[in-house]
Every structure is written in C-alpha cells, then in structure tokens.
Amino acid sequence: MARRIVIIIYTLAIFFNAFGIYGKVYTRCGLVKELLNMDFSRSFIGNWVCLIESESGKNTSSIKYKANRSQGLGIFQIRSKDWCTFHRKGGICNVRCEDMLDENITDDATCAQKFGFRAWDGWKRNCKGRKLPLPLC
Ligand SMILES: *[C@@H]1O[C@H](CO)[C@@H](O)[C@H](O)[C@H]1NC(C)=O
Ligand SMILES: *[C@@H]1O[C@H](CO)[C@@H](O)[C@H](O)[C@H]1NC(C)=O
Ligand SMILES: *[C@@H]1O[C@H](CO)[C@@H](O)[C@H](O)[C@H]1NC(C)=O
Image (cartoon, rainbow, N blue to C red):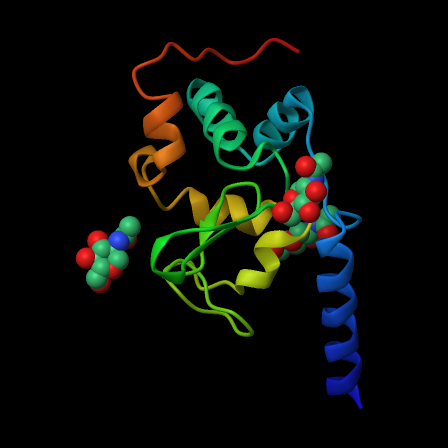
C-alpha cells in the first residue's frame, strides 16, 4: 500500500516536472541569500552563482542529457553517472538522484561542495579566470 502511494507520488512528480509546474527558478538575489543561509563562503559565492547560472539557469528541476548516458540534475547539475543513484541513496554523494530535482537544494549543495569548480564544464567555460565578486542585492 505504502509502496503504491510512493509510486503514484513519483509518477505525479515526473508528470509535473515535465511541464515545468514543479520546481523553482531562483532569482540571482534569491540564490545569493540561499547560498549564504547554507554557509557557503562569501568569497566563493560569485563563482557558485556563475556556475549555477551557466549550468542550470538557476532552475531546480533542470535536467540535461550528457555524454555516456549521464544526466545533469538540478540547480547544480549533479551527475547521475557517479554522484548520485536513482531510486536509492548512492554515488559519491550518497543521495538519490530524484532528490536533486526538488525545490530543497540543501542536499544538492552538500553534494556540490564535495567537488572543485573544475568538475563543471559550465564553470570552466564561463566563470574560470573571471573576477566574480559577491553579487550586490
Ligand atoms: C526548468 O527545467 C525543467 C526541466 O528541464 C523545464 O521543464 C522547465 O521549463 C524549466 N523552467 C524554466 C522556467 O525554464
Ligand atoms: C565516455 O566513456 C568513454 C569510455 O568509458 C570515455 O573514454 C569517455 O571519456 C567518456 N566521455 C565523457 C564525456 O565522459
Ligand atoms: C531540506 O532537506 C534537508 C535534508 O536534506 C532537511 O533537513 C530540511 O529540513 C529540508 N528543508 C525544508 C525546507 O524542507
């Protein structure tokens, strides 16, 4: 019974996600506030904001299909290939990939902070070597 309810909830979540109803798109200032709340170091927030804008457009339900059947998931584009696993906790971050698509970005942030900025192509392409101060809000 409980299992059936979980399956129904997932189906609904995937359905709503497909139509962009579920999930949230941060504003730049909303994102800065959230990152500060989660104790990200002020000196690196400019880089995190640039990374997030470049990778997901600040969209918590962003899904991008990558090479080798990997997917980038959520605001930080967590990698389904090895950073998380579907249906159960796992991967380098020991999280469920599905949880990287909801509006709660606390677990996503904990995962992302395990890696250096160089792990993201979007950061290398658009943020590396740039002066990125804390955005003014
Ligand atoms: C956020 O990403 C989801 C999944 O890729 C997409 O369906 C939705 O349209 C996006 N939202 C915005 C505002 O771009
Ligand atoms: C895809 O996998 C192949 C073989 O495992 C590897 O050589 C290649 O670098 C991978 N490509 C990417 C973009 O990760
Ligand atoms: C977000 O998720 C974390 C665990 O990953 C939990 O501790 C926290 O209460 C959640 N926040 C909200 C607003 O639900």
